[in-house]
Image (cartoon, rainbow, N blue to C red):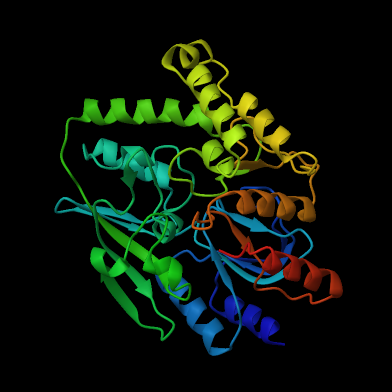
Length: 356
C-alpha cells in the first residue's frame, strides 16, 4: 500500500519515474533484478521532496549515480531506486565550480580543462558521477576528487540541508564521512579552480588516459578494481606465500620494465600474473570470469551467476590484507521479495563479509 501511495505522490507532483523497471540493462555491470519504482528527479528540489516523503512514510530507498561501483542482484526485486542522472547543473563563478551530484566525473575533467584548471587530471577515465566519487573519495595517479574541494551540500536524515567544508567531510583513502554516514545525501559540491597552462593539463589528461587503458578493462561490463590496493595487487595477493611472492617479484622485473611495456603497448595485460595466481589457488576452483588486465577486476561476459560472483569476491578478499577496503558495493536493500532464495543470498553476502 505504501508503494502504491508513493506512485500516487510521484504522479501528483509530475515526477519522472518508471514502473516495474528492469535494472539489468540500466546498470554499468549489466546485472540486476526489477525495481517497483525507478525514480529520476530533474531538480534538486524534486530529489529533496522525494527523500522527505520516503523518510516520512518509512520507505527504504537507494540512491544511485552511474552504478559504476555497485552490484545489483539478479534475483532481487527492489522497491525504490532513485537515479541522479538528470541532476547535472554546473555553474562557474569567482574561480569556483558548483556542480550537482549527478554530473559525469569524466565530463567534469573536460570542463576543468576548458577552464584551464589543474588538479583534476588524475580523475580522467574514472567512470561515475560527482556524488559517487565524493562518497568514496575517488582518485588515481596521486590525485583525488577531494584535493581542491571547497564544500559539499548534503541532506541529513533530519531533513536539513547542510554545507560541509573539506575538513568536516573527513576525506581519507577511499573513504569519507559521507561513506560512513550513508543516510546523508549529497546534493552538490563546490570545487576550486587552480590556474595552469592548458597545454600542460591536456598532456597530463592524455598521459593518464593512455595509462588507464593499460590496466583497466574496457571491453566487457565491469566495475573497475574490486578492492582498493595501495601498492601492487598481485604482490599483496601472494604475500602469505614466500615462494609465490618471490616468483611474482621476479616476473615483475621481467614483464613490467620499460622495454617490455613498450613492446606490449598494443596489447597490455596481466595474463602471466593471472596464471600465477590461478596456479597458486589450485585446487580451489575459480568460477567467475576476471579481466586479462587484472584479477582484481570482475567482468560480466553473460555466463556467471550471483553465487559465482560472490564466491570470487570472497576469494579475493580473503587473500588480501584485512585492512584493504572493498570499492564495489553489493546492494541488498531495499527489496520487496523475501522468499527463501533471497534470504539465502543475503545470508551468503553477510557471512562472506562483502557489505562495504
